Length: 421
Ligand code: GDP
Ligand code: IMO
Ligand code: MG
Image (cartoon, rainbow, N blue to C red; front, side, top):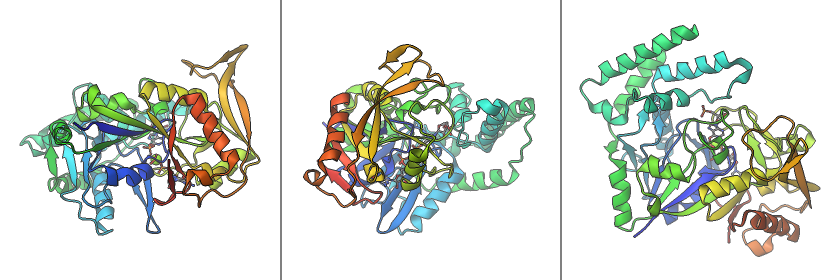
């Protein structure tokens, strides 16, 4: 009996999940997203072209793959429709390749307005949300008010939509937030109509039956462990469980049907939006990481905050996710660095701590271990033996600290720029 293998982010998102899922898809017939929504931006690069996916799983470009949007995902039909058109423009016939859970929740135009109103009201304390309506949609899900994909086919869909919309109007008037959804609402209903050409499924049955029939499934996470609603740097987090546990609730698979957990991390750290980031750099090294790594948001275009690798946070994420193997991304970005630093602990006041703290005060001081840079271009490396010794020392150290083997090393954005061990 097959199990669901998992790929998920161990930092603050944008680790390179899209690329890795695209690379691994040929080993898996089925790719399934289990949480998040269009706040995600997963980049794929192949045949000299780049592509960003927001809602559709990153297996979509591989021949014969089946791509499932699971019940734990929240969907904005307008964004999904735009994405589908862009995929079809690349000559992919997506109709039979994309299956959507009936139980996935819909992001209404007013959810987007509520997101914007809430962020505006927070002022300086804002989360730095992608403003896609994620938080308000999950609030309506847990508040038992939400609309689901399966509801699209019900006779009273419009009435239920209107009822929820007017409820939102009431909240928006309390915020005194000016808004106009007229144009978006027209697009939204048109996109909802277009969605009907896809098969709406009971994805929990589909996923379990695939497993019963020995069909391998890969679950694709969005965001990262440090943005998890429970264990991330709350309140500067997203509104879903981004971790392995989210695979169970977001796809309907039992914990004993979860197989390998592949945790992805960048060889350094980035974060977009507000919130604690102990190893953040405000100097020339930070700017270099941003420029060479092209660290600008795939969804919002915002510059990403950059800093050194943080083993305190990484070890926390490895523990919480039950990571069985690691995947390291973007080490090529540091090809020309003289010195590379890694945080192994934090100094908070007079105390040195190794466990990620409940709150990260502004003056947390990372304790760094320094490594000499490898000072050579590793982009062309395809076999582990061919990496420079100094690079291997960096890899060894991370493996030893996390207790996890690094099985895949990505050395560039393209599908082909990868080293499998
Ligand atoms: P995701 O959200 O985890 O899928 O990651 P994003 O797509 O938001 O961000 C990762 C960025 O890094 C994208 O621009 C990728 O094309 C790029 N990328 C992925 N792997 C590598 C790598 O190994 N080296 C370099 N230089 N870029 C990479
Ligand atoms: P992928 O899947 C990086 C961040 C936002 C903000 C916080 C809350 O591409 O890794 P939300 O829109 O969920 O209300 O935003 O979470 N965030 C991400 N950061 N990558 C993402 O997705 C993100 N999705 C949300 O910047 O700080
Ligand atoms: Mg991203």
